[in-house]
Length: 89
Image 1 (cartoon, rainbow, N blue to C red):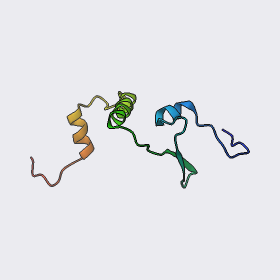
Image 2 (image 1 turned 180 degrees about the vertical axis):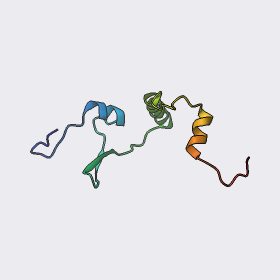
Image 3 (image 1 turned 120 degrees about the vertical axis):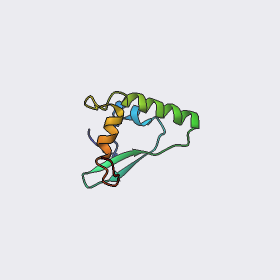
Image 4 (image 1 turned 90 degrees about the vertical axis):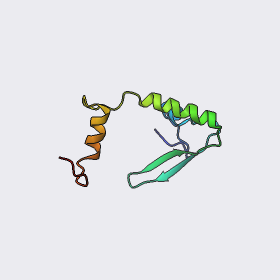
């Protein structure tokens, strides 16, 4: 994207929707080692709206983790790794 002569950029709709950015929303530009990060400033929203946003985010994430055929318990055991502190034979 290009910066206008006024220093403005257009945030793509997909990103605006994902971050809940709409007209009047505030964003921050944070410098990083790799460039810049755009962050939506948390607005005062109701607990109900926060819950809806969280539910939408969870829905977007559903099915994105491939456990490679492992059960949840097997995955957690793999994730934690060996436990030398337990004396189990």
